[in-house]
Structure formats: C-alpha cells, structure tokens
Length: 360
Image (cartoon, rainbow, N blue to C red):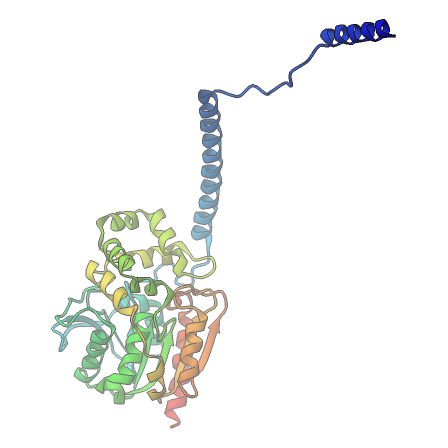
C-alpha cells in the first residue's frame, strides 16, 4: 500500500515537473518617440481637416456676401446733395450737420455707435423723392464731428441733439434714432428741454437698458480689456482687411448681408475716433432708462429685426411695454443694421406718423 502511494507521489511530481507554464502575453508598449510621432500625425491631420472645413465654409460665406441681393444698389453711404454746416454744442463739440431742404415737419435722424450720418443715405434719398425736410448729423467722435469736454456719454450726446434742435429752431420734429441714436432720442425725450419740440418718435434697433455686448463692460477686468481692444491699432489693421472686416461686422446684419453693406459698416467703424469707440461702450453698459419711459407721451414706433443680436427683440419689447400706445414693428430675418436692410420700412413708419400727427 505504501509503495503504491509513494509511486503515485513520484508520478505526480514527475508530471508536475513536465507541465509547461506559459506567461500571459502583454502588448508591447510604444516608445515615447512613437507616441509623439503619432500625436503629431493626428494633430496635423486634425488641423488640416479643420482648416479645410473652415476654408470651405468661409469661401461659401464670402460667396454669399458677393451674390446677396443689395437693396441699396451697392451705394449705401452715398448721401445726396445737401447743405453742410458746423454746429457747436454746449459741450464744446463741433457737429457736422447736413440739411436737406424740403417741406413738412423736420425729420431728424440720429445714427448709432461707430456709425455716422451717411448711414441714412438710402432713407434720405427716398424721403427726398417726397421733398421732405431732413437733418442728419454726426455724433461726437464719429464721422466729421469733434469731441466735446463733457465726456463721451449718451447723456452728453442727448444734450448735443437738444442743442441742435433748439439751435436750428426746429418744431414738430419727427425724431428717428438707430441703436445708440435711439438711446439718445429716448434720453432727450425724458431729460432734455428740446423734448417739447418733438411730436413723434421712431426707435430703430435700440434699447433702454444695457445691451448684452455692452454689459460685459460692467466687469472691471473685462472693461479694461474692451477699452484697450477698441482703441488698438491691431483691431484697425484687422478691419482694413476686407475679408476680415466683413466677417467682424457680419453679426450686426441679418440674413444674407450683401458685401457693399458689410464694407460700409466696416468703413464707418474705421471713421470713428478710438475714444468714441471705447468710451460709449462703457457708458452704455450703465444705461437704464426703462422706468422713465412712461414720460414719453408722443406717438412712437419701435422697430426691430428678428435676427438682431446686438439689440434683440426682448429689448424692443421692454420699450414697447413702457411707452403708452407705442407700436412694435418686427422685421423678419433683418438684423441690427435696419437703416441699410429696411430703409423702406423706416420710411413707411415716417409716413404713418406724418399722417397721424397731421390729423391731431
């Protein structure tokens, strides 16, 4: 018995000694140089793919700009013949003013931030067909107007506008303001003496409180950066490139903006003094006229584009809710630059207010 057991043990030991034990196979790890090589390869291919996609998208975008229908006929900044004067305001600023002789109530057009009076060229041409009396001007630091000594604020340019209306002895004024010009018009109707000379108001793509973009200037570190950027020569150099310039301003326009209008927006930006670009943004970040809008008693039309990202629809609704009996006009697929995109709609609003107020 014991012999058998011993033999079995020996056999087991022998068998166990003959078993081939295999280690699990592990993948061979790549070297650091191999990893770096692959990373460079895929980074290059990824960058190439993104670059090609972006290039194709931009080319398509520029083709859209070049082929889009242009309701201005390709000349959005071509003011018709007029009388030019220089008007000195109580702030010490000298404003470049254009007077288009005609009949009826004077129509005063107030442009927006980084624009100038040429913005209204197409509207003025249409109004002249009816031989209307029109006044346009450049805000401080914009176009051909100088900067005064009271600071570049909405309140300061509202006083300029009040001075201009009273200085030219205008009465029964139809006041039209675009963007910052609309803020100027609202502030005048609340706080300035010339409000009694205005009989109707058209607010075009504007706001009574800080717009989303300007709100960033409330944050001090961002405010300093925004001021530096808007005053920088590098930004100007970027704008001087037609392609880059068009892309930078395209967000202010609605659906399928034409090349000539984009370049016109770019050109007006470049014709604005650096201080005016930056300081007005900081001031507009503090804008709050909402609660005082109830003081505006004249017939008012508020116009906004449904694609406006700078002064969006909710800001137009805010104004509409405060000004009694005001009319809100929403323009489908239009952006912020309504004096280009929808100048005929603005003329129609002027005609409506002219008929309405003539009956009163």
